[in-house]
Length: 241
Ligand code: GAR
Image 1 (cartoon, rainbow, N blue to C red):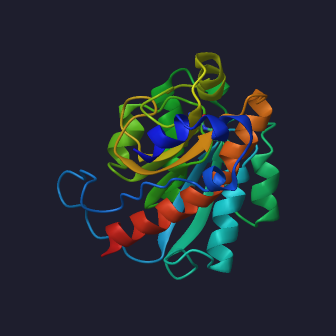
Image 2 (tube, helix red, strand yellow):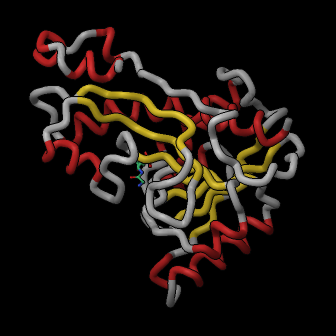
């Protein structure tokens, strides 16, 4: 309803309005997320394993929020960033991890014969670091049942669209091409289907008339950095209570 009103207000389409740069957040941490059988209670601090392919700005936002305890429920008593697994040798996330003193392990997908073999290697690393919860922060590989089944309902993902619109690797390009007036980002529990699964949080971002891939992505990322730490905090609370 809120989105409909924003999308149909012509004055808001011409110039940015502070009211619509505030994220419309649909916080859904507990009762309406179908978690299947009650999950085993996680002990605190929850050990988080990050999967990342790119620049790692989401990693940094999560780490800063956690270290500075700026979101209720996410702090060194409740969570620890144990390891970052990255798949691209040149990914800037490796340098961010180093700066944040988080171990980073390269699992280069080109060195494995199948997606399952890559996932098996990732699981091995996560077991070594006793990971309880997997956070995909810009992970651009398709995950298989092997990883999903090793961490059932324990894998979160962020995607730069309002799912179920525009799943896949070209979400922002497709949103621009389609001409949507509102897009955004989504945090969800990962299942064995690309960019699908129970939604935990979303933030709406208006598409402005002169937006390019870069400008729109930048504004979406501002919201990603807000909703991902919040969603992780809420999910940890749910899984540990
Ligand atoms: C983020 O915008 C995230 O939503 C997107 O990759 C970017 C990673 O940025 N993920 C996907 O497209 C997953 N389908 P970062 O490396 O700066 O965190």
